[in-house]
Length: 127
Figure 1: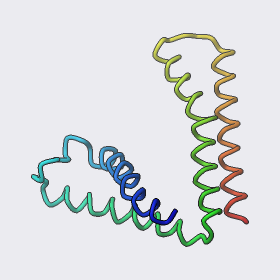
Figure 2: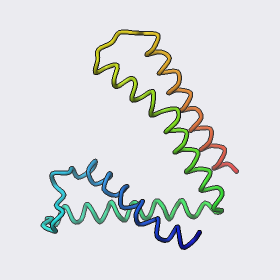
Figure 3: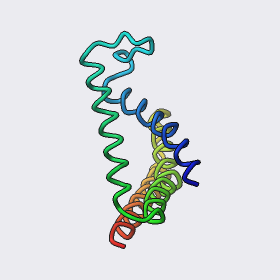
Figure 4: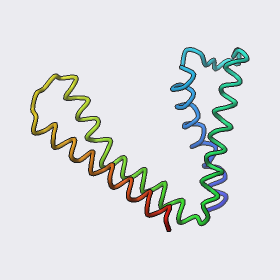
């Protein structure tokens, strides 16, 4: 398991790093051929340092089970209860549909998901 995690971390971290760089710096300011300016390099180094620091802080919680429960609960709760209603609401806005009952139902499911993710986070961190 440790060997698997050692090789999995850089792959997963790379994807998260690219998402953060695109969101913070912007894809037009990131060069794949190494022609970055000093500001871009400094921002990218800060994003990497922040990501590694955040994962190091999570590792200090203690116990692999606690971290797995926290990450798994938040990720699965988000994927199951928050993302589908968010996508449905975005598609409703795009189509300009005015079905209030469907919109209310999606908001209720999304709110329930937010409560579930919050409860999982609270109870995991308090244990």
